[in-house]
Every structure is written in structure tokens, then in C-alpha cells.
Length: 365
Ligand SMILES: Cc1cc2nc3c(=O)[nH]c(=O)nc-3n(C[C@H](O)[C@H](O)[C@H](O)COP(=O)(O)OP(=O)(O)OC[C@H]3O[C@@H](n4cnc5c(N)ncnc54)[C@H](O)[C@@H]3O)c2cc1C
Image (tube, rainbow, N blue to C red; front, side, top):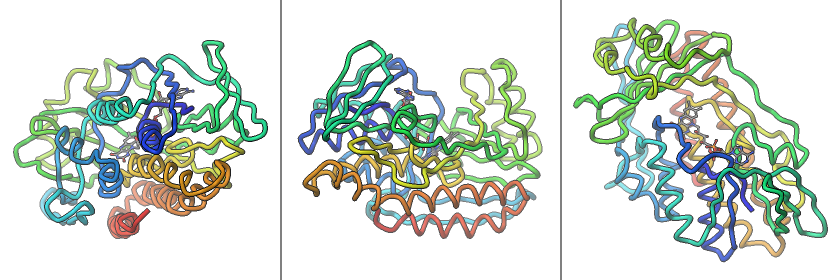
């Protein structure tokens, strides 16, 4: 039983089903609930998706790219950072993709492997006894399973039901995303330094891109939906000409989202008996490294690998957490350090840290 049909839940489901597990997913949201903005699949994400045979489908639905361009506050000087091509010299280093399309690829493969996804359903109670997990669901039914995977995101219910402390904290930044038409010059990620905010553009298809903006040092708040587009256009006004150029396209409140930067990472083990949490439920980085989804896909893949390698489920889970904990904690800690540097206006100190962390993440998981 997997709780949550996000990136972690769907990839874990596919990887487990391929190794012979019978998998059911309980997903709280409706089948069409994925928010419309895009995300960036970095090299490690593409590598893990490739191991599942899904990288080419994601590249076909998204936009392949291999360079990040950092543009200074003056809008003129820029540094181009080529990224390592982890899935071969002939394929791109990373991909931008609209979330609904990524989810469609992941879900189609999970269902092809026999996974059953049920919507509008969550878990309300968990008990463990002699290697079996009794899971009570919100429709009143009960499942007796060998493995419970909490892939239910940063506010994980499974994490609480397994008895872990919630580690989530607000980092003093609000991040914006909006879908805009792709300008013809945009063929890789562009990051624009600003004072005090920073912004950027990521292509997600031949015709679309998303603009992102990070608001520094603001209190956590919710703005009325109808104010979002106008406020984002205002925040983009001080940036370089190339950002100002796309400002008029930021219209239509349904395409604009604003989220608090929340992070968290479990300190000890992520498993209790035959229950485990993965993805953001175990380790949620700030979006600065664009790598939360990469960790989520790796988790799904390696969970199935370690469970197959070990005699008992509990031993497999322990080996899985041992293999994952340091890498995931480093990524979360680095992302939090990057937030601190951004908030202090020290973007020049942030760039080498980003590069070093990408190099580390390029190492095999
Ligand atoms: C603004 C922003 C931008 C980001 N950009 C990037 C990026 O460019 N690249 C990148 O790699 N990462 C990015 N991330 C991080 C990335 O989105 C997450 O790390 C990733 O989605 C984690 O996947 P997950 O499956 O663990 O959790 P989620 O994607 O949150 O999925 C959890 C699923 O569980 C469901 N669920 C929740 N609670 C319950 C419940 N109680 N019962 C049943 N189901 C439940 C949810 O509906 C959801 O479907 C970004 C994050 C943010 C906030």
C-alpha cells in the first residue's frame, strides 16, 4: 500500500510492481488535481527515470536542455554553466516539463504494470503486528499489507501515523511560478539576479515556459487568487530586459501560483517496522537546487532495489534508509544554505555551492 500518487509514490509503485509486488495507491486528491506549473528534471532525475525506461517519454513531453545561464543584476554580464549529461552525450542534461504531463507519464506506466490508483482516499490509522501492517482507510475499509509506503508529501499523514515528529519549517521566502509562452531565445534555464529578489525562466515545451520568482524575507501569507498575476508583474518589473519582455504574458490568475518555501528532513530512520516514508515526506528541500523530484524518483527506484536484495522487508527498508539518508540530508541542508545566501543578497557565494552540489548529485545514488 502506497499513500500518495505524486512523483515518489508513482515511481515507487512502478519499480515495486516490476519486481512482483502487488501495489495499490491511496491518493487524497482527485485524478486531475496536479497544479499546472512546470518543474525541472535535473540529470539525476533523468538518470533514475531512464533506469525505469521513462526518460525519453519525459523528454518527448518536455523540453531538453543542458545549460544554466546566470545573468547579473545589471542584466548584461552572464555566466553559462554547462551541466553534466548523465544519460549520455547525445541526450540533454535536464528537462523542463509541465507537472500534469510528468504525472501522466508516471501514472500510465504504473497502471501498465498493474498498479491500482484510488482517488479521494487517505489513511486514518496504522497498526503493526508480526511483519504485517494493518492500514485503515478513510472509506472505512482495512488493508492488511506487507509494506506501507508514505509518499504523501511534505505534510505527510503516514509520517505522523508511524510516530515521527514533523520536521517542517518556513524559510522566509515565497516562490512564484507562472506559465508563459516560450521566447524563441530561451533554450536553457536562465537565472536573473535582482535586489532583493531573484527570478528566472525555464522552457517546458516548444511553446511554453515557466517564469519563477523568489521573494526574499517576507512573512508567510496567502494572497487572493485574483491579485496574483498583477502582483507578479509588479515584482518582475525591476529585472533585466529579457524578464520585462515576458511580463505582459503573466496574465490569467489560473496560471500563477505562489507558495511558501518549506523544508524538512527526518533526523533518524524513515522506517518503523514495515512502514516507511519517502520523497518529500522524508526529506523536502527548498526549490533552489530543483532536485526534490530527483530525490523522489531515486527513492522509488532504490526502495524496490533494496527490498529485492534483502530477505525480510524490515531489513530491506533499513538498507534503503542507510543508502539514502546522507545524500538526501546533504541536498536539503544545501538548499537551506542557499536560501540563507539569497536572503543575505550573496548570490555570488551561492553559485559555487550550487555547482558543487550538482556535482555531488551527479555521483551514483
Ligand atoms: C514551488 C516549487 C518548485 C519546485 N520545483 C522543483 C523543480 O524544478 N525540480 C524538482 O526536482 N523539484 C522541485 N520541487 C520539489 C518537488 O516538487 C518535490 O520534491 C516533489 O514533488 C516531491 O514528490 P513527492 O511525491 O514526495 O510529493 P508530492 O509531489 O507532494 O506528492 C504527494 C502526493 O500525496 C498526496 N497526498 C498528500 N497527503 C495525502 C494523504 N493524507 N493521503 C493520500 N494522499 C495524500 C498529494 O495529493 C500528492 O499527490 C519544487 C517544489 C516547489 C514547492
